[in-house]
Image (cartoon, rainbow, N blue to C red; front, side, top):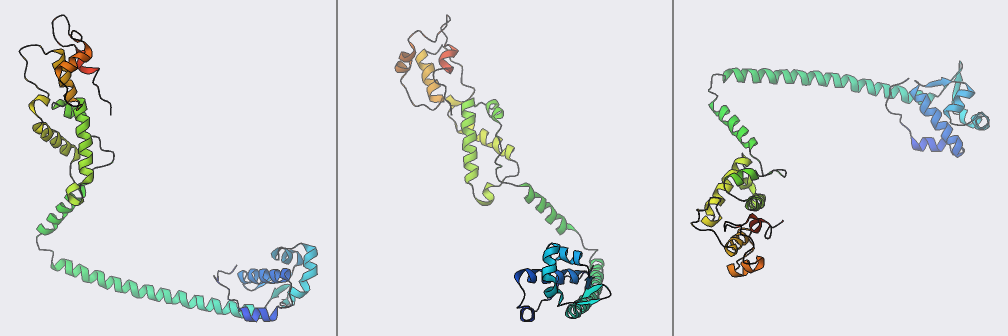
Length: 278
């Protein structure tokens, strides 16, 4: 089977010679031509095989074969075509020339590459005694730059660390949301950090420094128990729900609700009524 990749078709010549053929005969003729091209210019003069090549049954082949085979020569049990064989030889010749040219071109390119490699080697030897300080510095800078990144989408601030520093769970969640919003909005290199967990820890510490002393996790001990109203007001403020007068806050729960037998404020008044959910 021929490995020639293309078959040239002269459309004007083809149509001029085949105007009398039916559509079915055109198809059979072209299929036989293309198959012959792939088989080095000849096919067996066998009706059964030619019918299969033409994609018709034996009955249809016998009806159309005379007009189709009129374009071929029959020699020694094979059908051939002079024009097709001439074009086949041309295509083979062109293919061989291109192949030879490609080998020569590859050789020239290889020699040129060898010359360039030799020149580079000489240049390297010539400068091999120079210190590598600049290269080391550039490498370190490159590694450093690669480590920096913007805030990852899946970054989760360490809320336990924030609470260990003195924030409540609500405050830690609020700081985490502000942290994300702030760094997402930063453009360019300002929004690039080498260590996001460390950046979060610094953020928490700075936020605690800016908080009023009454919002810290380590409030001063009181000399006397807080009233229900005072405890409720403090809890309301801590959760960011606004300012309420102690009398009003105490009235919400009853004057005696929220105290135990020792007069201290119950945990119930500090957790349940004012719990915020984001």
